[in-house]
Length: 156
Image 1 (cartoon, one colour):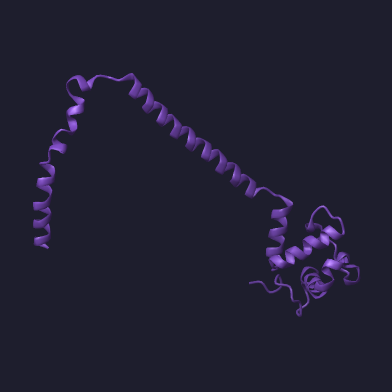
Image 2 (cartoon, rainbow, N blue to C red):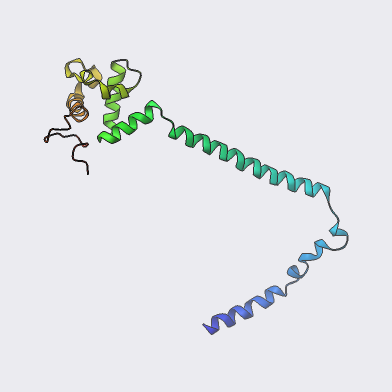
């Protein structure tokens, strides 16, 4: 430990004795000590640019945060799917089903069990009929029955 301190103590004095460090304050003496309006203006412009940049960045981030917290149909669909334990592919199926029925938003499917009739599925969803039936069972299961497959039942 003492050897480390000794080595550090012998290392710094030669660096501090260097001519660069001694002449560092010379720019503030004599004719160099005069006030230069051009340098002061440049300094104020750079500082103002940084302030303006950070102000603009804070506005953009605040707007982005507000848009994420807004109640849009897309955010509502995401929240409903998450609450019912539906995956991203299930959300895609709901979107395609809503497109087929020309609904404004897939969110309306959460209120309309009659839209999940397998025989009326479009050709693009005909292969996914089992998934459509499973989604219908999850969304419209009786919450009072004990054999329900809904993730909302027995949630503790």
